[in-house]
Length: 124
Figure 1 (cartoon, rainbow, N blue to C red):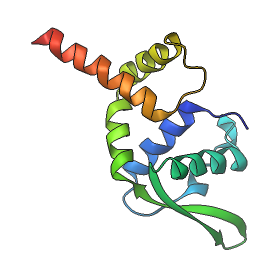
Figure 2 (cartoon, rainbow, N blue to C red; figure 1 turned 180 degrees about the horizontal axis):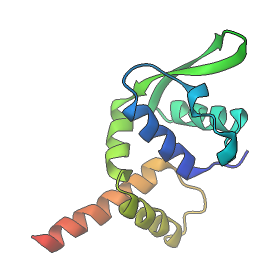
Figure 3 (cartoon, rainbow, N blue to C red; figure 1 turned 135 degrees about the vertical axis):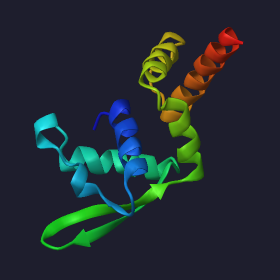
Figure 4 (cartoon, rainbow, N blue to C red; figure 1 turned 60 degrees about the vertical axis):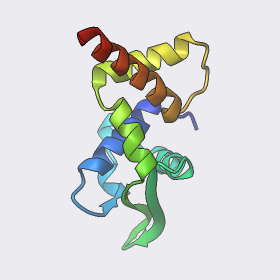
């Protein structure tokens, strides 16, 4: 399955805004083309990278789903770096321009942090 870096960011933003434990099936949106397998793959990638805490669990008559407990400390740091949509877009472009053909949120977060730091320095 192809990794959708924007979906990873969207999941993290959704998890952050949830008031408590979040059930992944709430994120399913067939109209937006997000299938169960796509969602589970991307949640699994975020868990593997240590950006969110979640567990796979059975749920009523629905097959399995992820119970997402929240962002990890590392997830909070990365999300703070990639939160701003304008900086997110610039960070992705910068990472690609520097030759990254496959990259993760942490690399883009670093690029975004550099862009934000440059913007702050320009103001000062």
